[in-house]
Amino acid sequence: MSAVTLIALALLSPSLASAEMPKLKVLTLSIFTGTTHVDFSRIYTQIYDVRKLDADVVCLQEAYDNRVIALYRDFLGDYNAHAVGVNSNSLTTAIISGLPLTSGMRAVQEGNILGLSILVKKRLQAAADRFPKAGIFSVQASSSTLTKLAENVKPKGYLATRLEADGFSAVVVNTHLSNGVENALRLRQVQELALEIDGGDIGNPHGSYPVILCADTNADGRQPEMKWLRERAGYVDTYFVENPDLGRAPHGGATWDDANPLTVSLH
Image 1 (tube, helix red, strand yellow):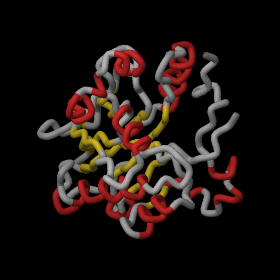
Image 2: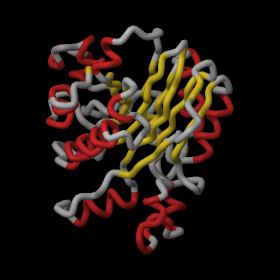
Image 3: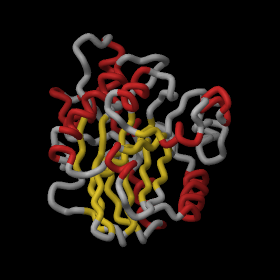
Image 4: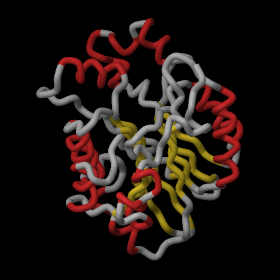
């Protein structure tokens, strides 16, 4: 079975798209760790391919297992790594232990199971003042009970850091939006994220720095949340730059496939 949604995307803020800056290679990948079983042979294949690509910045989503995050750190030793993962070996263990279901959702508020990671080449000095910065998207009161439960068990949010290279600074934001066909929650999430970026909550006061936004969006470029990012927030969709017509894009614009050997799980 193949996924039909675009879930790995990098966007550039207008200031980054137009600024004179050192060339940076950015990789974004939803690694699909799985929540009940980790296929480590597949993870090793991922890491091997990621190393070959030699990106300056690597944003990972769905790194729900601390052992997987540790492997990426160990095998990509020339990167500084920031991560918001889980506090146990698997999401199932966390659920059984009651971690994300405790009174007041303490674990969710602390961002324990976001499964996000940003790796930055050590030659790019990550700012150390307020970073990394993580946040959880609020679950709207109008959401269904089932949606609230899903968002609380596997909360969505962001991880951000700042990098510096040759006198140039930028903010890198990694996020994971909610699942579901035409899920209206995603539009609220990108609007909430844009407010935090523009408001300086993630270290970018008054748009002082250009922004690189990587995401597992669970949406293709035709969806309202993606249009809003391009048309209202002013981000440049790097996929659209190469594929302005999604109908003629490879795989109909989908950038993730659960039959891909880097994401497929046999268990």
